[in-house]
Length: 169
Image (cartoon, rainbow, N blue to C red; front, side):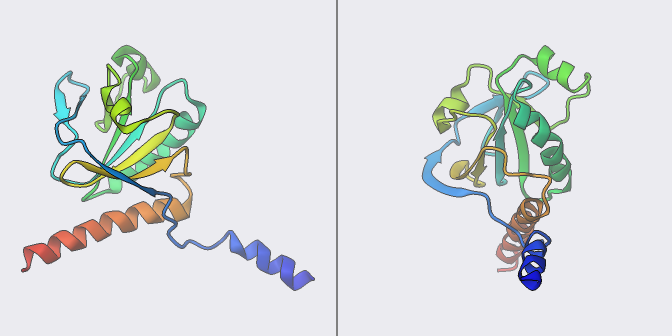
């Protein structure tokens, strides 16, 4: 009995990557745009895979998760993380005490969120380099938790390896 309890306690210590995403029907987003902090419209299709994360300043799980996701974004080499809100820039700037990270963007009219069917926050989509949404990560997966962070790092490294292999052919 003691051995069983001890083994159950070890389960949580594993650091194996855990893919929180689910496949979705591919959705072409290459003509869709979002608004950067400078007010310019930017394409979702950037030539790199994108982790498109929808959030809001009033969303408690979003506020808990976003710092961890932005930390991971700074480590990414192949995958671009873009955190999109439909709120006003003044509200977003206030949330970040005026220092808005470069990965923060706006979907002012909600067109991008509607196209993807975002119905609750937070909600995240994996977009391929051609601008096609391929996978969805609903809710707050725990970006700061080692298995989830490890998955994103592994995904980023895998994309980099694929790009290197294509370049060597």
